[in-house]
Length: 439
Image (cartoon, rainbow, N blue to C red; front, side, top):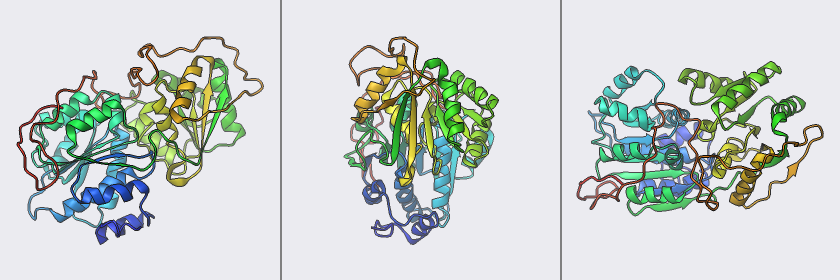
């Protein structure tokens, strides 16, 4: 199977091949033909398997084939949960559309809105955006959704985790009822299925990998480490292994800053990335990390999805996430596109319950090792985050995400409202009552 066999135009095939891809990934092979046919899609695929190209390529083809010779209204909208993911998707859109006459743009918070407004008013075919900034721009009448043909929700489950349900409600209420809807995500919870039922119309479900699976070439290692010795052990791992690139996850912004400072004092070049950092600082830190100017990037879960770091060899969970699904997304930064990777977790006594929940999710036992000199001596009992209830596994409430910042996330996470508008349809060329309700 080739990209040409999927029905893509020569211009798009040429752009894809120039990026070094000749054979579509499983999710691309399954999703692209259905999207080209105008069907709604509910797609689940392991992170790093090419979801972005899976929706970008067929949408670009539709836009190129149906483009008006004079007017350039916004016709395709990609919503993402974080600025970093929005920037990455936009880069892919630009690369894949280099041989077609399609104009694209990206908007997100944390930067001056005036250049974004100017770009939108000059005409854009496809827009990549975070919900918060997009709503602000819509309220300023800088963007119209009246001509939207295709709506794409990328990392939809993460958007709900970050409290974007209300913003999604508002944005969708401004769009035509007749449109194609594509929902891509690494996992699908009950909330995601409820969201999908309110947006998608007779969707085709595609799944390239089992839900919550991890890359086959990722090696899992767990070290039982005393809580007070985690920093020292992390420094030992990096120096003894002579690592040149490692992504380290902490649960809090303060913890990320503190660890970064100690790494630098130990002679390891490092930077932190989280929601309290300016967009300029976040962009610089990520660029330096990709270019190997710094060895360690310390991040909160804002970096757990969407960051495409080619051939990243090591990920360290300095602290285990208290939502087990986030473990999958964190370690998904390594072992991408078939490459090998190593996922290391440092577990103190307080986190043993988190480890058990992760193992239950993965259906895999993570063998633990104790290293001489770093033996766990703390005796604190396992504890759940204060924001989670004590219900059975799988029913706990997700904690407030520590990585999102103003402009990326609303303050509250509201419940869903109602169902799909009566008579609403999706797919190009269909008809239906355009009465709007919030899902």
